[in-house]
Amino acid sequence: MKHTEDTEEQTDLNEKIKIEELSEVEVKNHAKTGENPLRCSQTKQKALKKRGPKKSFTCTQCGKSLTNKHHVVLHMRVHTGEKPFTCDQCGKSFARSANLKRHMNVHTGEKPYKCSHCDKRFSRSSNLKTHKRIHTGEKPHTCDQCGKSFTIKGRLRDHMRIHTGEKLFTCDQCGKSFTQSSNLKDHMNIHTREKLYSCDECDKTFLRTSDLKKHLRVHSNVKPHSCHLCGKSFSCLENAKKHQKIHTGVRDHVCFECGRTFTTVEHLKLHWRIHTGEKPYKCSHCDKRFIRSGTLKIHERIHTGEKPYKCSHCVKRFIRSGTLKIHERIHTGEKPYKCSHCDKRFSASGDLKRHERIHTGEKPYHCTECGKRFNYASSLHIHTKKHSQ
Image (cartoon, rainbow, N blue to C red; front, side, top):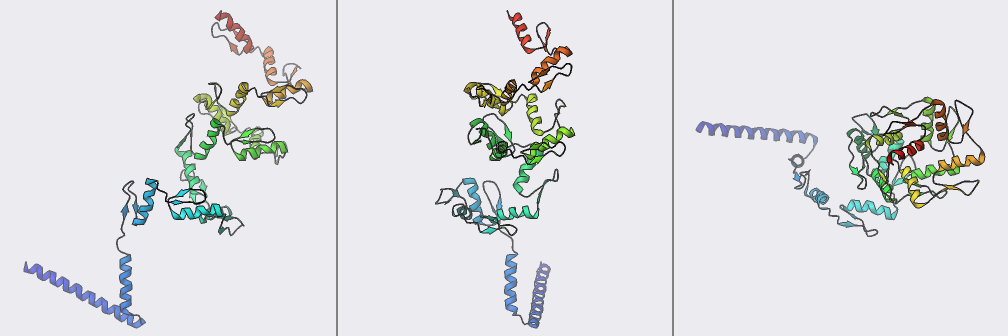
């Protein structure tokens, strides 16, 4: 026992000697430079305090760790929904005073942050930082699945849902799900018919202002995009690109169910509903449902009696623009569809198709009761009545 005590005393004595030796060295070194050794010791003590173990405060609701009590108070408002800072202009409330301060710029119009590349100004420094990436081309947020890069972290987050298949935003009317809340918001207008953007020229309505803007070119006859192969002009670049595929024959969107190919992803999506049976567009007057919003719109005119397309030669009006086009050929005498077997011509493609069955002998309509086949759907309809009598 005594030996142990002697060993401990010796250890303590050695440590004291080392500390004294170190102190003497420090004093000598600082004496050379002219520094006050006491001041240096105080600085060292402060540095040691800073390097001490950091306190950690944990949220009792979600387990998140925070560095101080103030951050805990701010964080808890996420769970409680408390928003103590209210705008005296519009009544909007915020969890943090800094957020209210930034919001006030909306009312004052103050935009203190100016882009160094152009004259654009911003109310938030973060918005300026994001905007500058347009000039620099910087895209710091990269998808680890396909390598695509984005200027904003939120865009990457939205993009990742393409890979994961995650669709967080669901329509409570038809059950359709979306990867982005903005897409759901646009979709809801189909059901509510609210916030639609109307054309002053023809009363056609659109879900987005950008779509209305594109449509207005139809009336202004501005067609800035031309096909380099045939010279045909288009009001929208997207339509010009789609048209190019007629020449190239590229149909790169394939239906994995039946193998049918399409020139655009939109056409593939519409086609896919044939397999799934999805009909998201319901008539507000009856229980009939449709694959396309355009078909619903045309159908509802049966209930409303609306006939927006008027013949320029007579007073007759039509539900569909295509029907008007065919009708006007009665006045003009135009018959653009010629039979490949004889010289007969037709004003409508459907009439040509029916006529050519006389030459080919094709009878696509068959009776499920007796197996008899017919050239025309109307002939089959008349025939089936005989079985029901």
